[in-house]
Length: 296
Image 1 (tube, helix red, strand yellow):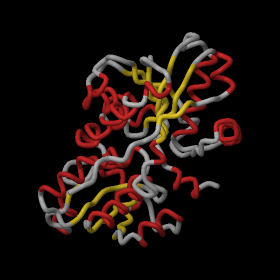
Image 2 (tube, one colour; image 1 turned 180 degrees about the vertical axis):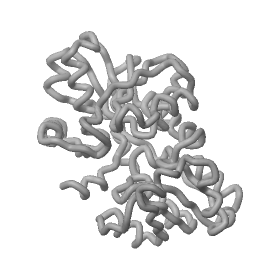
Image 3 (tube, one colour; image 1 turned 45 degrees about the horizontal axis):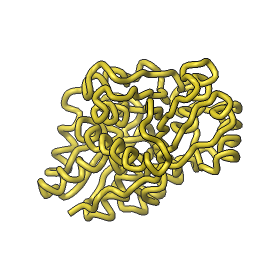
């Protein structure tokens, strides 16, 4: 039996550029819900883990890179809840802090090269792995698919339950980073058009995020904004300086792959006048702080 999802605190997000624009923001600290199964990963994995438990699957298998927050959370969940785990990794063997953690948590690693990893969406990709690991729960990259989105829909209820403590009767919109689009789709499903969900793309536009969200949640209720700054996992000095400045002002630890890029894209849109004075925004901290070890 899996425990209930931990409660993420909703806190005021105080930054000078928000105050100057008259925009109020609160940050949902998914980074604080668990030291290992952190951020939106708990929500994305929830239904996948329930399915694995219901089918008595002996193990869990999924995909990711050598700094993958998803594989890190999956390995930790397997260790905690009694599932063996296997990870299919992009590229060739590398020694990173995340990879060392995966090994310490007991995950069996398979390096696919770059061509082999690109085939992950092709028909028949999973067949040899299902033969090698019979009965295991195969989980899409990033914990995606409808089970992942349905788990992320629970994020909305967590935030709404804390609005009164902020003195808010309601809010106007959401803002969060989008990688696979699964978390964004979950929020769109939960909102059903009540509030716009803004996704800041941490990946290039041709990664199929819009198609994923549309397939899972429909075509309406969300907007996408470019935030990738040249590519997935790409950093520049301006981004890193912005992240450091926001950490100093807010006291909230950030990472530059997802949340930092999303926050910088929000500043750009706030300063461009997308949100009128008096707007109240909910910003999702999607976690992933373990990945900072890859670039700090």
